[in-house]
Amino acid sequence: MVFAGTVLLLLTLLCMAAKIPREAIRPHSLESAEYMCEGDLYAKMVKNTLGTEIDHYADSILLNIAWNYEREYTLRSVLLSAYYYSPEYDENVNYLLSVREGGKANQQYLRYWHGSIAIVRPLLILMSVRGIYILNAILLFVLFAAIMVILIRKHEPAPALGLLLGSIFTRWYVAPLALEYIWMCLLSLVSCLVILSFHTKAKQRWYGYLFMIVGITANYLDFLTTETLTLTLPLLLLLWLERKNGESLRTTLKATLMWGIGYIGMWIAKWLLTALVFGEDVRPYVTEHIAERLGGDVGVSLPLYLIMAVYRNIACTFPFSLGIPGVIAAVIILFVAVALGIIYRCENIDKKLIILIIMAGAVPFVRYLVLHNHSYVHYFFTYRALAATVLAFVLILAELLGSRPWRKRHAGED
Image (tube, rainbow, N blue to C red; front, side):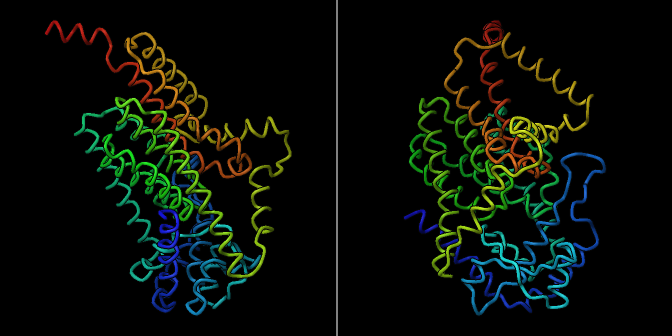
């Protein structure tokens, strides 16, 4: 019931957005299209710096789809997600031609929900895409600041530090400048806020529902970017807050299973609903895409392919992105941190908790290996999933150092 209700609600919101008259969004759509054409498809926020690419290619497609929704055939239009495409021009120009010259939608993009249009299209009544970028930046900062304040008030500096370092090392400050990037960051932070409000043992029955709804919403909003953040960040936070309740394994399994049901189920729901409405088998549109993302050919052997998919993502993180000096600095920092954790580890370490945290922190790497073509090609934004790995590392170190013997002796002397 929760799954069906959530899907129906999200589909209704998308249909309501499609009902907005095209004339109501025309001025800001034209302004947005002109703004997109002022820059490159893949401009860098920081020149010559890996991981700062801004993907206006995907944003122009999303805005193009939003512009081409048809009020008369709302459900069919929402499910088909068609936009204007011409091989003569890039996607920025195609978007401009569709808005200014009336280019008709001629290319479907039905494999995704494109649910963020339920947010973007109403906002286009009030502002251009540039204004939406600014609004997203403000919202990202407010959510992040709220989480930091709550964690500090709860005397939980470890997850606060881990989230902060994770966002810095994976350059979340770039995310608001691309609609493609921002939704998973915002959704993961909202999920963390909910966890902070419902982490008492008496309310554990809600975790399954929460993670399923998050998985559904992630699939609804995402363009296949950093979807695992919406599982790993709230899960790691939940594991840490509930570490004294002795149910960490059960919590991890339940959260992961329900998130997976939500995420995969939402994708299946889109394809089944589309097939039902159009009376057509949509599998050819879907399976070709899946086969490409799982193993598209780039001219190298599979082992090297897998290694390069992981390497490219790690290379975008700070300080690895600084080249040889950054790699040396990162290795030194990691070595010192691990050494301190081993030398000054406390006596009563929760080994099961550490194992579960390691597993959660390793999720991005599993994703890079499974979707190695996608991770290899789109490394410049998929690397942000490693924010969870940074958080996991900090939490493990905090568990090792949490109650060191010398601290107890010092407290006793005082």
